[in-house]
Image (tube, rainbow, N blue to C red; front, side, top):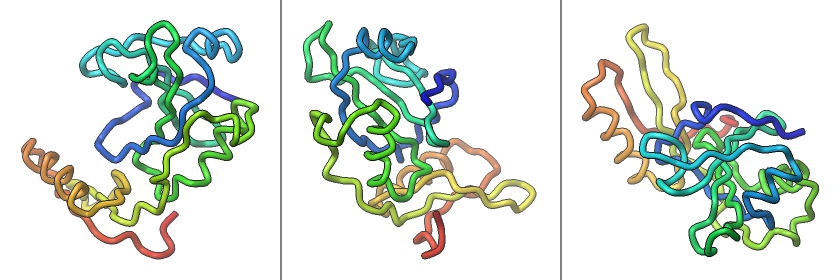
Length: 167
C-alpha cells in the first residue's frame, strides 16, 4: 500500500537517484491512488513550478514529480529514491508492485541503477557516526561533504567506500 508523507519527509542532499517514469499524469495518480500533489517552491521538494508528492511503500521513501519533457498538463511522473539507498535496482520491482504495474509498462527506467559504493557520513558532537547517503561517484560524494563542511556546523563529514556488509 502507498502512504503519502509530508513534503518534509523528503531530504534532498545530492544523493537522490532517478529510478523510473510512471505511465501516469499528476491527475491520474491523484484519481487512481488518492495522492495529493503540491507545486514545488524553492526550499521544498521538486523544482519550482513542478508538481510533487512524497510517498512511502514497503519502507522506502520516494519523490514523485512531474517530468520536465512532457508538456503540461500531460506531465508523466518521475520517481526518485532518497540517497539512503545503496542498491537502487531492486526498487523498480517495488515501484511496479506499489502501482500495480509490470516493468514493461514503465515508459522509462534509468540505466544507472548500479551499486552506490561511496558512503557520505557525519560524525556528531557525541562521536556518533550516521550515514547521510550513498553515491556512485566518489567525487560527487566529496563535493557534497564539502558543501556540508562549508556551512560551518560542528559535525565532521567524510566519504568512505561502503563496507561490503552495508545494506
